[in-house]
Amino acid sequence: FLTPQDSFLIRILPCVFCHLTSSPKSRFSPATAISPSPEMHYLGAHTISNGGIHMAVARAANAGMTAMQLFTAEPRYINDRMSIRPERVKRFRDALAPTEIELRNVLVHAPYSLSVANADEAKWARASAGLTKELERSTLLGAGAACFHPGNAGDGDRQAAAKRVAKAIAAALRAVSGTTRLLVENTAGAGQQ
Image 1 (cartoon, rainbow, N blue to C red):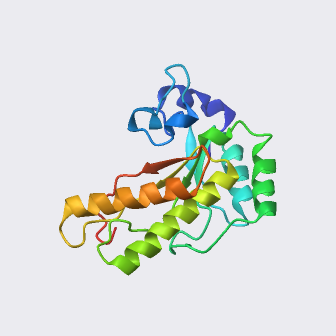
Image 2 (tube, rainbow, N blue to C red):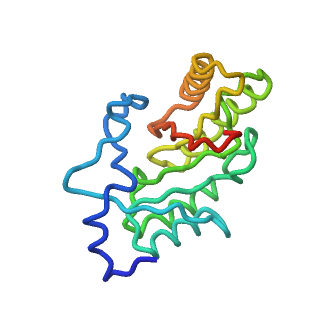
Image 3 (cartoon, rainbow, N blue to C red):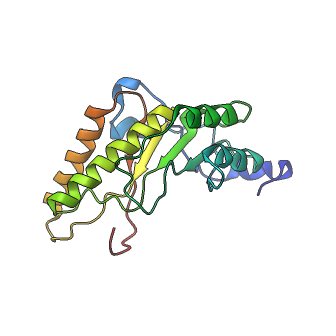
């Protein structure tokens, strides 16, 4: 955890979570998905949500963070049917209000198990539904963005896999209106991703 005496780190570290705001009309635009401000850097942490997502906010704020990342649901499952209750959203926003963390600097991480690059139609459909549900939960929270690992081209056809990823992104963006961005996180080659 950082203390107020560690504030110099915020100035010298690169932007951990970049400024995620720009025109809401350009919700899925690579040119505007990350637009860091040269005079402002954000220090963020992916905090655990034991006790609820409002506790993830408390942990990030107690560490002096100005941005944060969290899971809205169990990261090991697709969570394609799990919604977020209004009282949970309220607790999250109430916890965020007195902190230095703005909603636009909240990044939700989708479950690791989503693999929208999957060639198996049934698995792809469930993963795509999970991505849409994550965007829905993130939008209800008011998060600046939701990121996900796209998975891999298990069948070896990378072009087809990229089309499946694009199809899932398009489906999620059509299904959920709002300003929360959907970001693709590079996969580190973990095998099953």
